[in-house]
Amino acid sequence: MNALVDGDLERTGKAAGIPLTEYFTTDEAKWLWRFRLTQLARDPSHAAWIVRAVVAVPEGHVVGHAGFHGAPQNGTVEVAYSVDPAHRRKGYAKAMLSALLDRAAAEPYVTTVRAAISPENAASLATIAGYGFTHVGEQWDEQDGRELIYERPAVQ
Image (cartoon, rainbow, N blue to C red):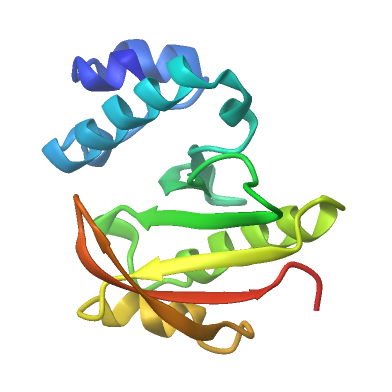
């Protein structure tokens, strides 16, 4: 993540074992990497849960990143996924969400999966449709503004 903050895709690709795209070094992405580095410095237990590069199979190229916002808190994990604009509208977001839901369901201490989405983000709202999420409230996010909160049981 430090290499991504520095905009060094060559160093990042070597560390990751696969080339990453410019999408990982946008200003928005760099904000995310800084945030995650701070999060890990405070509590390294989040490392197993947060963002990972997503590789399309069988093509073998990186299409975005996915993970959770952190380790489970009171049995709840919050999904986080983003598809590189060059690979959108190909089903990758749904594949990412499915993989995240499978991971959450495999952990006996995870009982609830949350998704917090801007009401203007029609693509993400469409992505969670059909996965059993229920609207449970709203929140204000300092980075993203107003978000709608959806939850579902980890195991369905």
